[in-house]
Image (cartoon, rainbow, N blue to C red; front, side):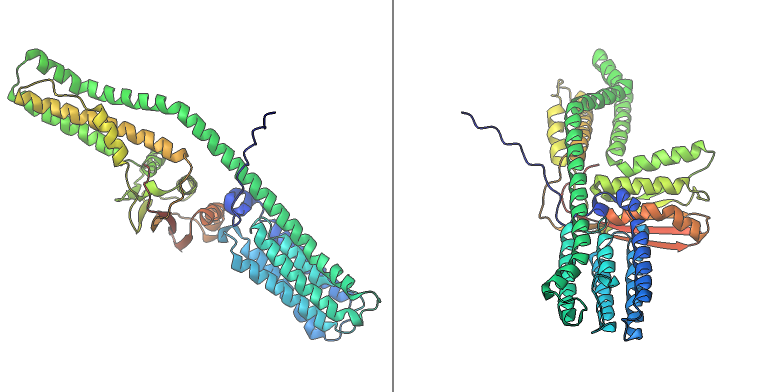
Length: 471
């Protein structure tokens, strides 16, 4: 009897992941949940307080309880704003702490005169606040906050049990009070866990599919790169070499022509090697602005090619922001400046891989004449550079889709600064940039926005380990 092959377990998302972190656009769509929950919490607190005036002995404490709960709701709405993403742990702790303070104040205002705990507004309001954290915080954190809050509410119910109007075992009051907090907290944690795992599985499957398709197309891509390089060489270099070998003589004009061709080919290949994804993006936007009849002047300052160290999410976020800026009404096409600098070592290049391909593509010297050797050596350098460019293309495709290895290298910070002149009122400018800032704050460590009309400056940091980058 053979044992069935076990099905490999699908990877689970990290415990610190949240819906807003893994899917910034989805977190942006979930943000209206916060003001809706805040409105329900505040309305219920006011209505419940008015309906229980006969139980309230200290009116000031009751009013303070409602006020603190309103502050907690306001903090929730503020913390969940897309332009302030991501929703940090400190904000969540502050919201829960304010909810607990409102509960203790409400309990003190009706101490010894509370008829039943089922109609207390503070535990229900606290539970709803925990429920609103589902799209923004990890499930373990929500569960920890929910259990801690439920314990405080349960202890408060036990302390009030001798004065309640219903005679029943005290632990039943504690269970009822804790359920009002624990049930929404468990629902919030379960939602966060399920959604995060679903997003993580989908992203994992998508990356696997991309890697599979890339492996299939890598050979075709390499062939296309070689063909393109051969076309470039075939236009001038190869006919010149064929003519020299056919004549079997070399003149001073031929030597001068060989040097000129070598310089031109080297310049083209070096320019292509130094070209990054950011250059391609700016070139496309510059072309679109030109097609609209504008005269764009878009400047890129990235001398260390730090843009190569950005991952796919960061590239997509930066690209979307630049495209949005170029399409905004009132955008000055001569004002866009993109600068990247930072601390730590710049992204390394793929020299070891490309050198291997370069040596493999080199050709032996077929002539013994010293002058002819110089020409053939130039052709060897061109062929080596050609193979090196091919290897760069292969390394770029592979590195862009391969899973990121875990490294223990030193940390480096790349800072990208984008400046643009936009002649829009501040309100319209903030409204247009709000969704993009939400995504930027989710994928970058720190985002700073400076607005001095009409100049808009955005600066954000990208942390990375000092591993090899891709172009």
